[in-house]
Structures are given as C-alpha cells and as structure tokens.
Image 1 (cartoon, helix red, strand yellow):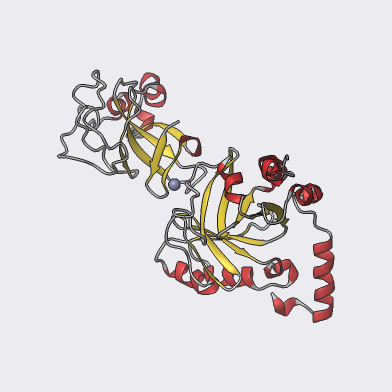
Image 2 (image 1 turned 30 degrees about the vertical axis):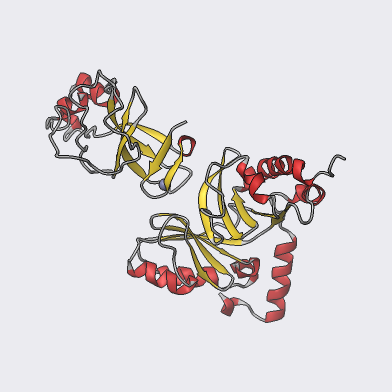
Length: 216
Length: 134
Ligand SMILES: [Zn+2]
C-alpha cells in the first residue's frame, strides 16, 4: 500500500499520529512492571503493538509456499519457529501460523508485510488476518524467568527440553497464552488483550519472591 | 488431572482440552425419516460404559484440532489416540468392560491401533436410529 501514500512526509506524520493515539493493553501496569523487576534476576516489560498476522494454509500447498516466500519460511510442527530477519512465524496448529513482526511492519504505519501476505494468498483457500490488536507481548527475562513461569505452566521448561527458538500455545496461570523462548533466559508471552492485566499482575506476584530484597 | 497425548503437540494437561462426548455417533442418513423418538435417541442417548470408551477431544488451547481417544472410564488409562474419521481401534478389553483392569496396557500413551481389528458389536450398525443408540 506504499503507493497510496501521497508523500513520505505526510505518511510519517499520519503514522506518528496513529501510534500516539493507541493505548497498549497493559499500559496501566508499566510502572508496576518496572518496580517489580530486578535487573540480573527477573525483569518484566510489555512490548506493545507488535505486528501480528494470523495465517492459514494447508501444509505443502502452493499457497503455503507463496506465504512462506514472504515470511521467510513456515514452521513445520509444534514448537517450531520459522522466519527471517525480524519477522518470525510461530506454529499454532496444522496449517495455522502466527507471524510476529516489529511495530513498523504494520500497514497503518506504512509497512508492507500484510499487503504482501494478502497478495501471496490471492483468492486461494486460506487466511491472512491482521491480529495485531488481538494479543499483547510480555517480555520476561533473567535467570529466574523460568522459575516464574514454572509456577503457572505445566510444560517441561528445562533448557534440556525447551530450547531457545521454540514456541508453544499453552496455558499460563490457567489462561491461554503463547510462550516463546527467544533466548536462554528470555521469554515472550502473548496473552490476549483482555487477559493482559490479569497475566501481568499474576507474573508480578510470581516474581515477587525473587525480585524482593534479600532478608538478612 | 489427565495427561493427554495430543497427536500434534504431545502430552499436555487435561485443562488444555475440551471434551466432545462419545465418538463414532453417525449423523442419521435421512433425519427427516426419523420419528421423534429416534431423533431424540440420536441427539441425547449415549453409552455410559464401565471400561473402555471411545470419545472425542479437542486441544482447545493448543493446536485446536479434534481427535479420538480410547479411555478407560474406571482407571482413566488412555489406550489409544487416533484421528477423526478413523474407525475405532480394537481394544483388548472390549469383551469384558466390567473388569476394569489396567494390567494389559502398561504404556498409557500408545497412539494408533494395536492388534488385529475385530469389530465390536456397536460400531458396525448401519441404520441411523440403531447406530444412534449405540
Ligand atoms: Zn494439540
């Protein structure tokens, strides 16, 4: 949709306005997240407004191949994450995927990702749906991050089993969420927007024993 | 809490799943020909066995896919997990559901069918009301 922008300057202004008007689902917890984090132990923050796109295409179909060409691959099985550069594709189910990309990849900010995916789908069977407002992103990092998650998730999160670069759709604190291990001590959690406050507060509570000053 | 082996995602907690009731209940071939009694039997009447039960589950917080499962209603032992649309695999304990013994299936997460398929009495029914009641 780049060609619809009359001039780069007006597009930039419109994008800035657009972004300034948005309120992220856990914005009201930003201060609490900062206060409840302890650098070098466990830290929690919200990464607002990541671009997310739901994809559906049968595995092995031409449509899937065209979509994969845009994203830099589609993951093949549960846990797998594909993609290239700053665009990642998480496996949600057979033939169902979630593309996660930076904020500026969104159409409303002049990004070309979603139109490119839509073009790749064309009129064929499948889906390309903008889900950017569906979920928010929490980033939980630090040596205690795994201990915090283990209080509310029943997957085996031991690094021997749960490797960096894998993601699972599962339950955290009894609510559905996607858990993506992005590094040895860093996780991204995608709760639905309506669960963001609950999960944010739950994580803060679970972090408290680690992020509190040590009792002498 | 059951640990259910999703065919796509592997073993997950029961809370990630939703139950879909008895499996292999065929939709009547011609619903308009059924009497109210027959229709109600199709809609509401289900088996309640003590022993192995074929049932449907969906991994709602995971891959969101449906599958069939053979579960022992006495021991909660999961005997088999198999795709939708596939006939019920033979179960060694079909003949004697009352015993409820778990000794024949030490590995509760076995997937697919095991052993020769000797059809059970209930699955092969052809007429709608008959099939619906079983
Ligand atoms: Zn699953």
